[in-house]
Length: 238
Ligand SMILES: [Zn+2]
Image (cartoon, rainbow, N blue to C red):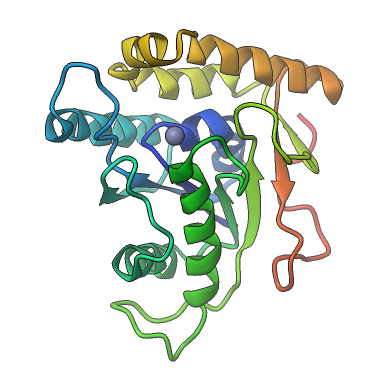
């Protein structure tokens, strides 16, 4: 299977689905990661272009730790993601047309901030548009309207998980990938006042308890036309 994770900021796919992606790599899937923004807002002290350069490199490193085949970044500045932007939409369409995913992980449409919500819409629109031959971009069209699995957002939203993936054996690798985002340790603590990395580990363990294992990630599948099929796409068992 071919899998594309479309995260908003440079560490979002890592938080939301890297445990699952590690299992996908282990079962032989081709896994690609794409960040929409360059992370330009993620610092209290560095200028936007300085922190952006650091963060894109951190995300590339994390994708390497995962074993992804390629990392893409659309280069949008933080806080400016706009799903109606035709240039960014075409850039994402071309990532989809190059990677030809059967399955896409992305942000939930009811996430906690606008960039995430716009990324969710962008992924939904681009993955449909990528399959329309008469919509011309640099690459030829992709033949599959990819299934979409929304990652768990932060906070309480309309997210209702429909599928769980046991990440007991890949939680450590997920955390190694998260540790590539060195620039964000201090930033997240000072901006949110919480240990975001520890909070995600706790959430993965809590989700594990809900499905009878040590740690899990969960997803809400997009159940709209052309996004469904008759078999389980996510890794099964442990
Ligand atoms: Zn984010």
